[in-house]
Image (cartoon, rainbow, N blue to C red; front, top):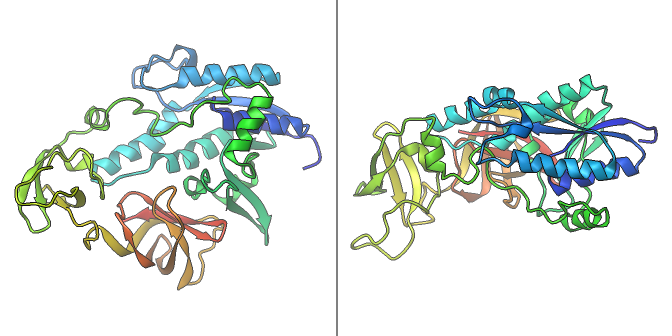
Length: 367
């Protein structure tokens, strides 16, 4: 890019988006910052600066974003996407938990809010591009836009962006994708940004400091049941299958079982029909360690599915190392995945994301 462009930056209040805005400004572009409020409890008003949700840090984040924009002397607009978030992301989140799966709302938030609702809003402002502080890269190669991993492998966020399409990538920029987190903080320090040492956000914003069970119980009715071992021995009670995920070992409250080994218990499966939570102390149990999975809602970033069988790598969770696998096409929306080595705790509702070296190809929801 050589000409001066109008770029609208999604300003979260964190150091990554702050540095993204700075780099674009230094490149000579006109930069407008937009702060997105994506969550509020039902019944709250729509005013960002009257955020009364004690569990979500929107008010503090907005203040941090405002300080950065003051230093950069760029406008900061605020837009409320909480209605869109509720309808497009949170409703899906609840539906998945109601069906005893474990969804990843960040993946859907990127697709529906940051690169759809926000992109549409930026277009209304006359933006040439939108930009975010994601650790990922975009490259135009062989007549298509490619989503690449961020250079900092410890921060790469391509896993959460696999649902993006060609139109979204064509209008998006990731200014810090070629940088390490350490370098980003160094740039923020040199610019005297007040959020230069701000911790990365973790977890799900709308849950915040609340216990997960407490939050989910506000929206879904739990049905308690019994906990059984893989050989059908009853050893405890569960609070509701929706509260547990495959591979979970914390919060089971079944330690110290008589005549059992001094080893942790893991959630191995859910018997939904009989409302049973199945557990094991064998971390290599076949229920926990599998080499195959099936996907639904399959999405390819290039819009073209590879010819199968197709060998590549995949991740079944964020921060996992790439795992060698072979994809077998079933239909346009689903495929079978065979891993070279068994994968631990494959979890229905989570995403499997495919890669060819640094390029993110797409992915699907684990069935």
